[in-house]
Image 1 (cartoon, rainbow, N blue to C red):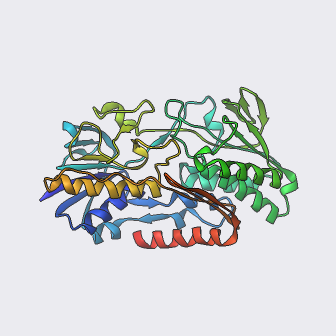
Image 2 (cartoon, helix red, strand yellow; image 1 turned 180 degrees about the vertical axis):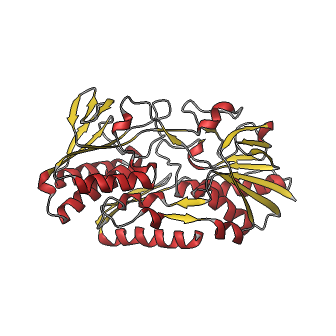
Image 3 (spheres, helix red, strand yellow; image 1 turned 45 degrees about the vertical axis):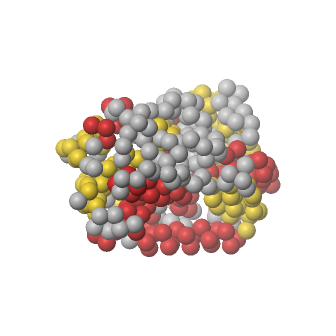
Length: 375
């Protein structure tokens, strides 16, 4: 029987498992990850308002693994060798006949004073920290921003920062204390959020102006201090700093022979194959993929990667030439706590629907359906 190893336990990894079983590929599947739980990161935006708790967003995967006949190995990956056929972990080596890397990326934490900022999407602990800090504040300035990987500009997660920004504004208005807070959005780009498209950028900036949110744009952050954000264009005094750094590949890549992009990700082709390697694929935030500069890599796009990777792996295992490129598509609901702005983009279309209450409920419904599927 073929042995397939999957690294990670996020969106891309779970979709890989599902696709392998859906295609009825006769294989033993081993998932290697530091924990056998899944965290639904898109809903971290609701933790500051108390709409979600960490326990609501963290799901044990034991039942999912059992249903899909997966062997789980709790371990931290340390490297990949033998052209992908051996995975080195802190719990020994695991050999395979095929490998799918879906272990995610990591935030760049090199900016001086980064410890003075909360990285909103670092996990449920960050969501809880924002909730607790906000509850303890009587007023003040909250600065929110994001940046990218200078060696790979597409390696960023900016969308959630807009959601935290608008969500905090909505929450403070509900609480009747918005007038005691100043919200400031900062970004090194003059037109932030370009990945979403020109219409979305203008709409988001207009929404900030409508809500009385200040902006500090076009200036690169230099450092964070306990009470301020220092940029090349001035300082922003702040009582709370939320900042999403750019991203790079997993740390274990540095001790691996896998091909890497300038930004530190695994280089992949349009079929999600790791360049120059057989039966070795990468999906989601671990990889650097060809395609438009607006393409994302997480959540929905990671699942699209996984579908293509499994289709191509199935061809390889059957002795056929792989030929299925991954689909590039951006589907995003920018949530405001009580409504949502729908952004859609593919190779030929890009449209934005204005904030509507049903979009907020659609986002919540999708969360419910997804978590029910992995529980």
